[in-house]
Image 1 (cartoon, helix red, strand yellow):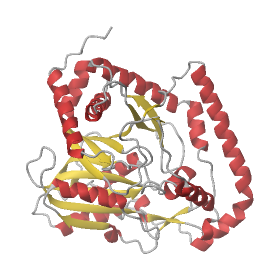
Image 2 (cartoon, helix red, strand yellow):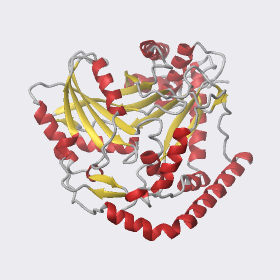
Image 3 (spheres, helix red, strand yellow):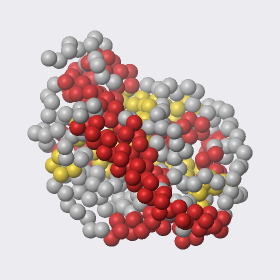
Length: 462
């Protein structure tokens, strides 16, 4: 019975103070009406039943006296997690996305659901009705990269199998918590000491110039008020990957993601009417390739200057590329990974609940400066590789990031096959005109594509 690791428990207890914590991943396919909704749902439920993490639930001890544990759910039935919706337009699908993301999870069973939206017209560049399949899974269960892996399995022709494993009852979890309670204090001291030591060494690396320093705090924008409402507004902009790749090749010394970050920065600056200062983005950096851990979430946060005051797009994209590389080097340095491994410290569930209660009672603070102005996460899924639903090939994928804290605008950049999807999730009380921002983003991509029609590298700046 593996325990829920501290970095996953954070999402279970603390992140839900101001917002729910689901990971949203979705696929777009053509709506082939020769396939019934029952057939589509059956395809997904048979594969979900063979994915281990989708069969596991969280078991908490009585009074949260100790660790939570992962336990295979008794009498698991994947059919109960899959829902079908008949729709007519993309706007309804966007409303479904935000509604699903706001739902509470039932912790007495595995914390996920799948929603199949059929008959959706007006999806990106496709002039035919589409099926949009949405996976909602709690962030304590997996991160964005893990959700992409689950989606790959759900849309594979092969049906996976899993042997139902360990189980634990609440009484058993409580007994384990009581037995290990003498270790809580020493364990906390150990973790705090390790985190402080690693942070000091990381700071020394930055002072000595071995690692770069993140951007200084910046003045707030109209989108950096405290997010308190549960209401969200969402949309997705679909962009051709070949054009993005040709643009990156034409600029030279940059990746496709750098072009996307620069374009988002330009669109946001234009929407805000704020061209006199650089906006800053919060990026997510996966640690899966360098970190050995059984935690379900393997990511760190980074801060990247979007260089929105740089008028030349070549210079802007190359500056973002350099900053992103430096941020990755800092985040994946040995001392940063050591600090990440010890934060948050391993605490019993009731301690996390006390921290969450304290945050809930805390009055919102209006800040004059913030570290970032918007969030931008990226998930690259590569080629379609036969991913399908009852023989219907996947056209595109996208995700939806969680809005919370003092970031009222979040982006997710998904790519699969020949399509890149940039999703937008926002607090409509702060970004009050989402259609205009979507239009700004589309116009920014069109402008960039018009400026770089060939694959010839640009001359080196300076």
